[in-house]
Length: 189
Image 1 (spheres, rainbow, N blue to C red):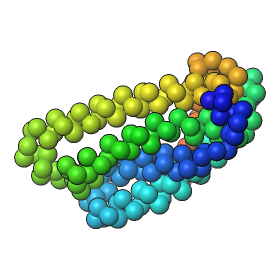
Image 2: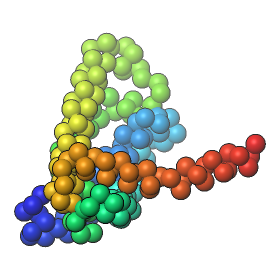
Image 3: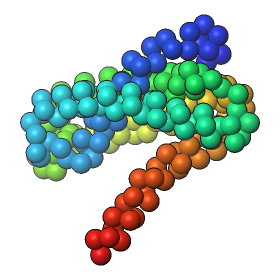
Image 4: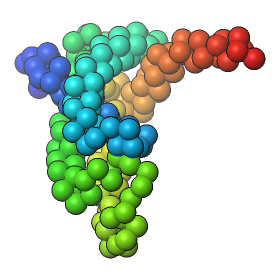
């Protein structure tokens, strides 16, 4: 991270944010059974286009809040440095996206549907999918550690303080949406 900050903190940041957005979009599409409403190509196209755009938007939005709340913790990072710290751990995400290739080959549209005939008919396939899930959890834990180290390096403090900074930034970022949702819920009742 130090080398990236000293050479070119803007290098590949937008590309890595787009990749992260695509990965999150694929996970959401699977979790929400989007394949029940769209064909596989529609799910994939939506994840690629919508995910990339949302990843870039989140990079700048979360970057703003991470830098802003980081000052409360005594951070020294620049805006471009903070965005680099958010983006570069997504090299791990980019490699993890390769796991979708064998999953799509084995399970196809069932990754995105509630009905899973291939998985229901073959317990071995279910175990294989569980193996992919466990591998993805390991990758996610690795990502979190690298992310906190990168934020800490950029902001000039420990990974533990980076964790506090990341949590506070996330809470501050979602607070307006939570308040709006609460107001709408009250207004409807």
